[in-house]
Length: 335
Image (cartoon, rainbow, N blue to C red; front, side, top):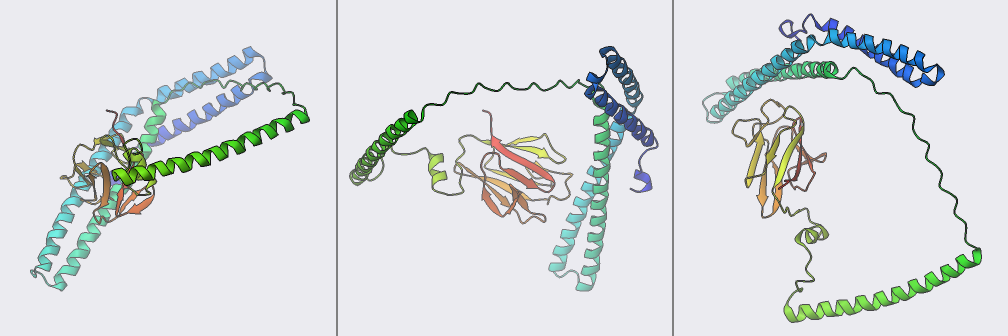
């Protein structure tokens, strides 16, 4: 991290307090684990002493909460600014490339300029990644500060009672039961074969006379799709996309249109603006009858579903979609 973005002077003190808190919490855990080795009043005295010191350390740490939040907001603003700069550079690069194709520039002018564009963009992407790492560290420290200082006492696990032993039946009785069960099973199998043959005959007869299956023989559409072995999944309600990882974790997007585009550019239905590993027009989801299809728009880093990179695939509930550093999950709406 360069001089401008180096960590503030108060961070060594924060880290020192966190180390002391961690050491005290370990001591409290050890005291609780060994409480049976001493008298109750000794246990309570030592535990209370450590908890009082722990509370005091948290009180020293709390004033840094606002300072850390300011650092997180500043990093987020810097990431957004750099992302906008990359987007503008890529647009300028595309325009330059189109003018080269049209013959406005020669090869000698084109190659150095493209290398310059790529170098600037890569440097800005590296700066964004640096800020993301710093933001993650601050978020971890903030979560530590806002955590509860108290430690719950661990209750000993109850030992389950063993069930009473069952009396074994006499061997002769077991053998008799087994013979009866075998005879009954053979009879059921014979009856089942006869019944299946009759049902198959009636089904074929009905198809010959009516040109297809009766309404009672027709399966629900979702079952037929799955049994047919196809990739299609028939949705009975409009799905929702939840972002579960990445800069936009916690956001939800209903599939309320027949075509939803995803990308970094501002003209997408789902804009992942600060994720530089996402292309400006990365992928799209389309509704085809009652199916939903995900298509990768020849993005730079690709689109994956359940860990497999795809070009085009049908989606079913709880599929995990990876677009850049953002993970989304598709689920039925709660309507």
